[in-house]
Length: 290
Image 1 (cartoon, rainbow, N blue to C red):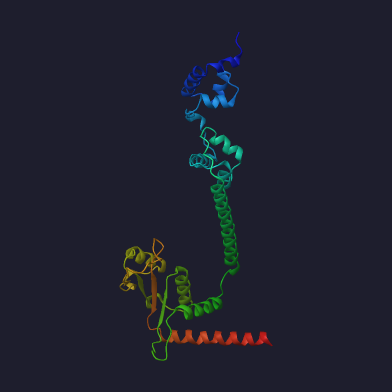
Image 2: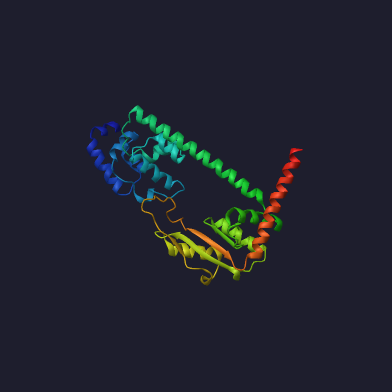
């Protein structure tokens, strides 16, 4: 009786049997046991190019990682590169991609460049994680605002971003312009605190003419929860073809102008409160110096 391993001499015949069993839906283990192939390298060669039967592809939590690892391997990525990006063990990666061809070796200079690029990406990820952590901690430290705190915040906000009276142009109107939706929300909350009725507010969208004007108008209307009748005709800024604009894309919605009707008295209160803040800050500074 011939030794079982003598069948390896007829490799093509053995391959035909292995392929036939594979196409009949047998797993690698079943084929190995059926043909008595104990050498994994030979089994890989026998089944090269033959996909596994669907029943062996049982869904699990790592299916997405497996597919991504295979894509990266076909792109010529090494085990180290796949491990860094996906966070998987090399043993898992090896199981997932062992039937795929090995990538060509890159020259040392190219490998060094890629290694440097990976280190920089890792550093950027760490920096971004730290940045987000600090922001989150600062956000959570604010807590609830008292009426006085919101009042002071609103005065400072208006004096930084709102229209101000000039000795040569006495207007005394309350007009606030901003592109930041958060600033708009705080300003509206502040007006509500001061007892300004929504009926006294008028809105105007200001935006570049080559932007999505309709989407911007809808966005601001939804944000301020106001009837379209409270909106004036949108102001379009003419586009200068010599200028390269960076404020483009879906996130660009122009600016929103909020004007308070009959706002002269409110403006005087804002200006007086602002100078009260300035005076208190000066007093506190003098006390800290002595």
